Image (tube, rainbow, N blue to C red; front, side, top):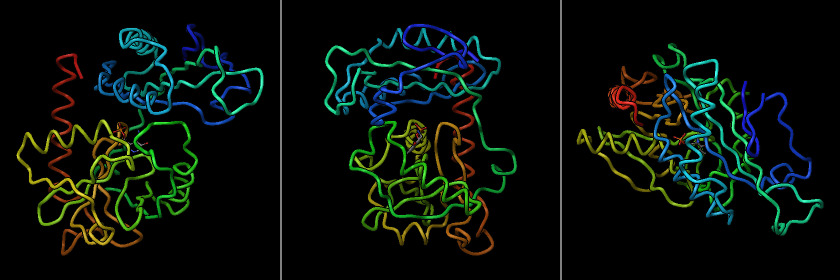
Length: 290
Ligand code: PMP
């Protein structure tokens, strides 16, 4: 598998960084994951814009122009041995010759990319939906920045896996934030509910596609803080992310989501949104732009 490290393309197994790298010592870095369908990057401009916002938020200069990022991504996409990919980009504040929290002057950033297979939900998960658990959101106050400081996300995700669930949905001060690696939507009485994109959640690229699709199809949409009780009483819940796309949550903390005969099954609004998403994705991919 080919990787890119600090200006060089090389086999992933040969890529090496220093143990003094600030990504390793301090999680001092930002990252992105760009989905690629049939070797076409999806929404690359939006991912590069979010990368810029993350770098600005942690006071790091962007080491490449958008044109340079696209050239590097293009070569990795072309050389990968699989069609559908997740391009991982990570930039850290580099490796100094000592361990000092202050920004090291004159030290070049570490720039690392590689292509992995895009792990999309299987047919059964897609058809039946997934189970999720809930937990308090213990992260810091800038969850809008996509930094590599992911330990709370890792622990939340492992807790879900230990419970045989796909995701942990988090609440802060009684309000929905997001999943450990997903944005969360709820549906109540036919209205799609989404939390506002403030400092407490990541502005998901997939989430924004879904918000655009809701507007384009004139689906009732309410973007506002969502109380924990509203999530627990929702008719439908779904997750979005670059890998999961639109994925129904049908069990929450062991209880079926929704009411009546529909309970515990992907609901009609979720199904429709997934169809809109697939149609949109296929359309933009057909025209070679994302
Ligand atoms: N929230 C968090 C915490 C995430 O890690 C991700 C995955 N990057 C998302 C939401 C979804 O973002 P996207 O749709 O851009 O993949």
